[in-house]
Structures are given as structure tokens and as C-alpha cells.
Image (cartoon, rainbow, N blue to C red; front, side):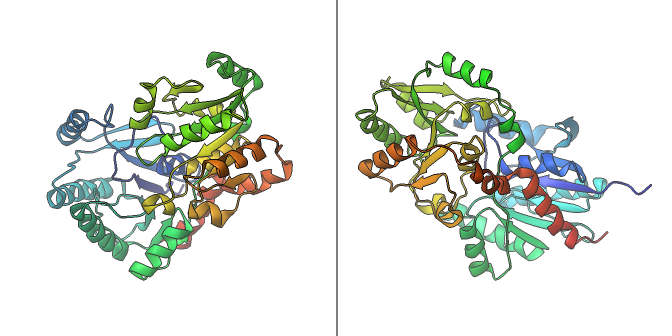
Length: 382
């Protein structure tokens, strides 16, 4: 019997908190239907403080190589150096070389923008994936990332990117063809949410009888939570039973929690196995990130997840949302309170059209994964 082919998945370099869904992990889980999947992992800091990051960094550097099973994945923990960048690249590549020699993967899916340069590959098909725009604010990071990305693009057999904007950016800057591979949602998981589960969440947080505006995700400085609260306060002047339900953690949440604003309800961070129920428990979803810089090149996963829960959405006009033009998404300019209130009033009275389901289903992670498999196997070397 022919041995099952394998794929090594390398996540993005940037630190992300473990309770949030990630593109690389969602794809890796579904790749198990086709391949033996090895998923590179490292310690996730408890929070974003310097002390937590230092502890996580030391733990990664001093650990012994280990492999364990989780969600059908072979989770691989290697000694990992996070900096200085030049030394880290050499160190991490050496450990990757050992791993690749040991598992001999047929495919490698790499989303790292600076931490994990790959060794030269003879047999494996190499897909380099861009979940975000490969840029940084500081000159040092910008130079490191650009050098790393240029080198990896030269090695890669296949390039994929999450948004049309990033596809065009990469093709223009690096002169390589790039395949569009969008973000998605687990449609079956959303369809499986029961009315009892929805009612339980609404009772728990005092949402019964309220018009619930939901904002779900991680709330860094780019999230526009300040503006979301302003929008809510103005909208409440028109709809008295409205509440703003904020699900997730981050520095912006910490700031607003201290203010104890009336009608703004915080659920805190919710685990990946439960958060889809919260999407189903709101009346309308919002995204108030200002569409500037890297955010304007993004494909916000939460918009697809709101849609998978069959919710209307109001969002700032991020370029990708303008391009894909989902039927349940209204766009309103960042900073225009009146425009946002009008949009929210409009979606409040708009029921879900069942014909929209077939549009949203195109963004099921299973379909997206099958497209990736077709691309990989089209270049298969063994």
C-alpha cells in the first residue's frame, strides 16, 4: 500500500493569542482529509505584555523537539529563536531542515513572514501563503520582512494570498503569479447551533428582548472600538432597546471596560469551540476598523462568520469587501456617525434572503481547502 502523503504547515510569525481562529489552523484541520498533517507550533504568551513574551520566548528556545496529536494534527514543537532576526533565521532554518529530513513531506504550506526561512527543497512542493500584507511600521522590521519575503518567493513553487489587494500587491512588487485563496468559515458548525444555545447566551448576558449589535474578534488598536461605541450611542437615540455586545479581548476592550458605558456589554474572550454560538446570538454584526494601511488589504474573517450565522453586517469600506460585494453586507464610511446609523436602521428591517446561502457557501473552509489541494497536486513532484 502506498504511504499517505504529508504536508508541513508553518503558521505566521506574528504572535497571536490561542483563543482566536487562524487561517493556517483552519486549513490545516481540513487538510487532514487528504494528507498526514504536521503543524509547527510554539508557546502562545498568556497576554501581550513584555514579560509574557519573554517567558514564551525562553520556553521555545530551551524546549526539546516534541510531537503530539491534537484535532487530527501532528503538532510539532521545535526549539525556536525569535530574535535577533539574522541569528534566528539561521537557527530556525537548521531545526526545520532536521524536521523536513525526518518527515519527508510532499508539500509545505508556509505563512511565516520572517521567523522561519525554509531550506532549499528538492522533493516537496512549496506553497508560500500571505494571510496579511507583508509590511511593518518600523524600518527595521520592514527591511527584515522584505528581505525574507523576497528570498522565500524565489524558493516557492506556488504563491497564495488572502485578498485580491494582496494578490495585486505581490504580483506588482515581486513579479510572480499569485493565487487568490480567501478566508472562510466552518459552515456546518454554524448550522449546528441550536435555538436553546442562542437563548442561553442571550439570557446569560441580559440580551433577551434587545436589539443586539455584535462586534466579535480581537480588539487591538486597529479595531475601531472607540468608533463602534460612538455609533452605538447615537443609534440608541433611535432604537432604545439596542445594546452593543463586544465578544473578545484586547487592549481596547480593557480601556472601555473601565468606563462602564451603559448598554455596552462585554463577554470577554471566548474559546474557538464556542464562539460560533455567539455569532448566532446577535442581530447584526459590525466591523469598524478604519480602512487604512494593512487593514485595507485584509480579508476580515469575522465578516464571513457573521454571514455564516446568517446575519446582516455593517462594515467600513475595506477594499476586499467592496470587491466581493456580499449581499448581506452594507458599507459605511469610517467616522460618519449619521451614515452608520442609517445603515444600521436599514439592516434592522432586512430579513435574511435564503438565496444568499449559496453565495456565502463559497467561503466554506472545506471548499477553500479543496482549492488549495488542487493547486498543490497540480504541482506534485511525487
